[in-house]
Image (cartoon, rainbow, N blue to C red; front, side, top):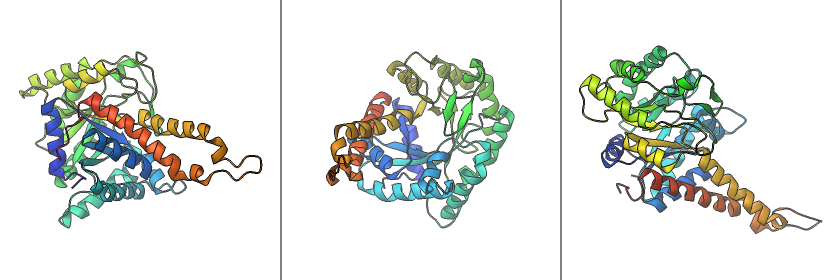
Length: 342
């Protein structure tokens, strides 16, 4: 079953942690970008995660209607069907959901999954992110504590963010001091004291170590992936666990060096979000195609153009394959290349 069951998803994360690698979690917003990810993961022999933001879900539903829960359900149904043709396993995840978006995004999706589980089926999504980075830490944790039992009851995983990822993604923007970009041991201790370490439901944690969403050149952002190791050690000492008790998520990784990614993974990152780079790979290939074939895609000087060149499938295939190449690159950076459980 190419879309992971809850048990398969948990095993995926466990295998990544034990094996010292991470899965690419690729943001998608169309059937074409879904196909790109499935193609790339298959070419890499890697399992992975497909995820959708509020804006991506709005786009799936039709950009004029703004029905993000509908769009997210359509995304999930499409992947569940087409992924059957690919020899890899993927999990479905909803990305950044701030407080004001909960009623129209994560909560109705949770309700839909609760109905599925009641009927003896699997949840529709294997994990959901609650992004409380824009509210005070205590409120962030309070809302996570409300969501976690519901996630546990449907055998799904909650993603939380402790700290602030800079930059902007789908209209969620953070401005503030540089200190806010670095999560502290004290911050995470507060979260663990309330949420536990798995006994109250499994969650994964997006901790911040200088991360910024969007585009930047290597060296333009001061990442400190060693901070993740320090936090893991602090939590292990505080709660008397084994090494690396937290399952971590890497946000805002565009422009990161291979060494920075490798150190983050070594310190417990099992999921790395990828959006900006795959967006660029997809669109850059279309721009190149149009420039190279402009006489065919445009009806110039009274001519009729070339239908085989302006057919959206012609340039669509080029774009899907170009994005797939970037997905393969991500699996190599994260170490999931060739690690599929199938």
